[in-house]
Image 1 (cartoon, rainbow, N blue to C red):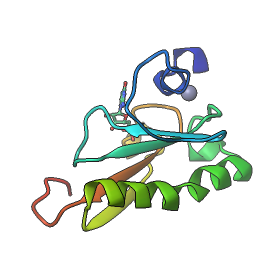
Image 2: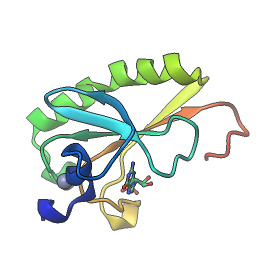
Image 3: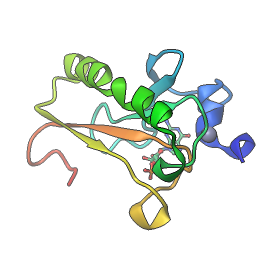
Image 4: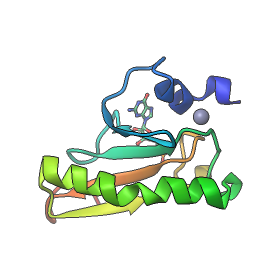
Length: 114
Ligand code: 5GP
Ligand code: ZN
């Protein structure tokens, strides 16, 4: 399954991406179709489908990096807010089945998202 996973290919550099942050456990990159400027995806390097199949250890590693990445986005793009989102299963909007957190910078009521 993970052989056909586009986020595993992005993690491995087989598909190019605009890197925002990387360490031994997570990789963060700009969404290919940003809903606002700086829309970033954060993935665990370990392939897990979604929150239902994620150990506490992987979840802790993934979420523990969110404040640092959120502050990097804040410094770069100077948004006035940030949404932290995660979709699980198709019915909830998941289209790539490798766990990911969306960090969506917000620029005010008319920024085009939500
Ligand atoms: P989901 O709908 O599963 O919560 O979010 C998947 C996200 O992955 C979408 O926002 C989509 O734009 C993004 N995405 C899909 N394919 C690629 C890709 O090849 N590169 C990048 N950077 N983002 C992608
Ligand atoms: Zn994967």
